[in-house]
Image: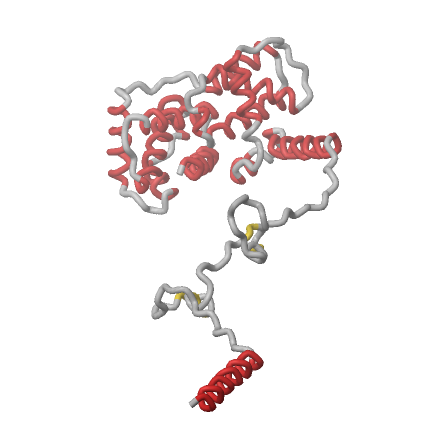
Length: 310
């Protein structure tokens, strides 16, 4: 459910034109609350709205704080207005009214000012950090580590020089994990960062990934296909008798085992319920005619000799 709720919060955050810090604080409140309480699926969106409302009241402009009736309208009237107030109070009591938290945006602004990065690098880093919001793997990461890792990755994508030469182990691991989450981001997030005032960061990142994919294909050409040599099935397992056509049928690349037992047990692919489990009868071997003639002549000659003696 997390990606769906983050999509909703990003849309609501953009609709109310709230600060970047408000979005990260709302997600932080949501994660801290969910770590202490069991949230039912039907109340998950209500908790997200309460977290966004608290974060907006804490650090955003007063005239941009969403009203409860506006949140109710965004939830398509799924909850009553009293439920928003009760959930807001419940979240605050669960967190002991500890709302303030140093977010990724706070550390990002400090790093941008210190390294004097341009707007394109900052917007790309913001885009990467919002991609990380969709994945629970980054919940335990420190905001300062996320800020430095996203800036380092943004500089690499945009081919900007990196003023920092060294990163600690946490920052290197976070940078590695973040670089593995860039494929197929949320469509809502991509539309948000495709706007020119955010440096078209989603379009730039998509083009960069396609270029890297083309480079990797040229660097490692595909190997030519080779003929598959099928090993005979007879004698595959020593000491085990094999039927000559036991594994002749191949379905979807997998060899199908023979139908056992043979005979009347399966009729047209269905189990014969009336069949008793016994060995099928073999046909009676006919007696050769010459042998029968020889037997009859021998009996006739012996009969004549007995008659003559008598």
